[in-house]
Length: 202
Image 1 (cartoon, one colour):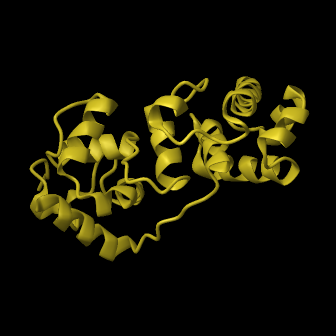
Image 2 (image 1 turned 45 degrees about the horizontal axis):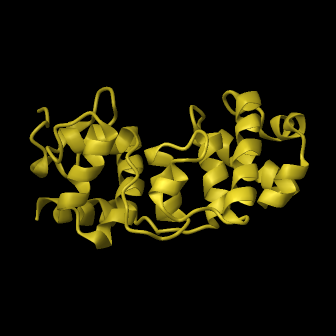
């Protein structure tokens, strides 16, 4: 299958290792990552989790303190408020445990489909594909989907993607998107999967 060849070729290039962390940490890091660069998100997450690494501990912090710890992530004041809301719900409704279903995750404030799938994939080890900008853009270029809607892209990819490749697909697309298949001016001449791409330029 085309999709298997694509994944296998990119895995040989990037040698990605699948990772799994505590669902709560993945969830909070995802909230911090919205409209924020990866390196800033990582540093902010480390500062926050060093002080408070559980819903109970975060709930004891003031919004001001959380904002201080996560700054300079984008919209840090709003995110501090959002984090307090989320941990309160997790404690009151779910007994301190992050819900493990997509439907329940998406009921949390500020949690959309992509964030829910990231938590399911890298927190619970479930075979789902988080659809971010890289996944959406590259999947369209490769002809794996025609849609621009993340939910439809997710369905298209899940329909054709063997389960064993789903967890690694997002990680591969992120690396591939940064290095070669950029949103603007993709480097088609050096693309390792151009033979499978109907959108390649010469």
